[in-house]
Image (cartoon, rainbow, N blue to C red; front, side):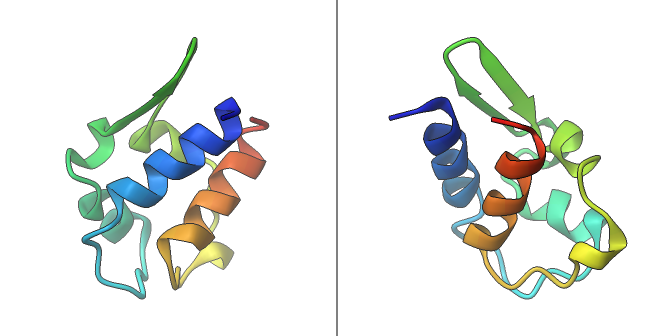
Length: 79
């Protein structure tokens, strides 16, 4: 599994219990198990939810699914 696939999978897994749609960045961070400190790691790549949240814009909301947000984050992070 590539770094991109592994991080994507961890984001989706981290949001498995989230209620969608998610309408704000604050609600998104609150949906992760450890909030902004939730960490996805693959090999030498490590990204926290707080860091990943900086890649989002107001136009990204509402978020309708865990897959949607994982797709956006791994693409914008350049993984």
